[in-house]
Length: 298
Length: 254
Image (tube, rainbow over all chains, first blue to last red; front, side, top):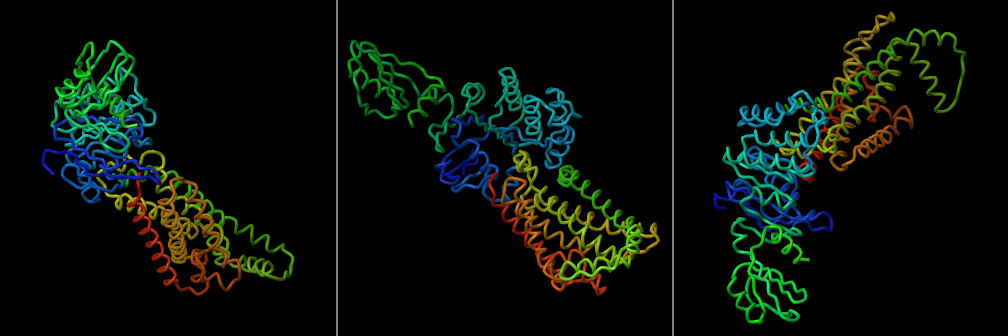
């Protein structure tokens, strides 16, 4: 595995009973990136994350920070170098904030006491309060703080903003960005909220039904994908495009809309050959890419 | 700190169990003067069959303080309630995993075998305290009713209680790794305890070889010798059950 990958999976497969959750998932997360992991609910995001952290066993290969996630001994080392926030913000409810901070710190030789003080203050966390008495927002902040202070090289965040109001989502996202800008680390975070991925990620992987459907740098994806819109004088035809990289073709009355990735010129050449009244090439955002790729798999 | 976490999670059930067993042990001792008084007023009756034998045996045991303590304390109250609390302690091992804290604990740089090891060791230490302290309390309280019960005897019975109860504790830990819900391991382990006590009910001769017989320290009571073979067998069985639990826990998906 190249040293540049913080996470790499090859043909990862996992089934629960007869349900195949991961169907040969291939994933590469480069070191130092903020990598968004997008997928619909039930696409396999959480199972992938649990596999990376050794909480779930899957076939295929998963390597985190160069170590095999399936090996129990390596798993301990992976977790020592990784900060994790679960989707439900699972914490030890019966402890106070002070107790859970001291408890967690005891497992991490590189625990950052300076960050602990900083985040306790910045997040206004009441140290004597029991974890079970915290609001959803405070709980998320505490979970983030506990992950940030581990001195980790990699942060794995599973739906970090789930269940939060828009103001709190913004606050949490900003705190992640600020933390990453100060520390040298890789962030791998799952979400089904495209806007937040677009806001902070520089790389993205979109999965659908346990398989990677799109992966790459966000800027490259925006550059590579475009929508070619053809308007005809009469009914739009039913063309069969031969050009590479056609993701989806939608036909509605006089309008033919083509989502293309890759060889834009070849697509345009074919499109013009259909004799449309007008041809427009438009940029697409991540939401469009996500919706078109995920639905085209149906 | 893992020990501290485990203590926080299990202390309530431990302290409640210990308090109940201590009260029970104290009750056995403090009731003795009243039992002696009632014995004097009891008419001579002769009942046949197993029930008659048991009634007769209970009356006979009550005439001597040492046998009364063994019969009422170690064979009945402490053995029965001890089994219950050993099972409850075993259930507690995974109670918090099923309450949503699993992912946080599993995200820590700790191996699953260490997680289980700390849980099991804490549970066994608590069970040891629950087995020994009430037994020793009997020895300490006995002079208050004008009787005596040797500390060594109390210690011997406490150890028998511990080793036999550890089997139920370990069985519950193993069952807890098989079932996500809390009540199922509890019920299955209690059912196993009931089934294993059947030889004891069949006849007097069998009880010496049963787990409940080992738990009450019947062999020590009757012969004055520690049932080392039985204790070794119980310890081995507990170790095997905990090993199975560790293997199961290592394979489990969360």
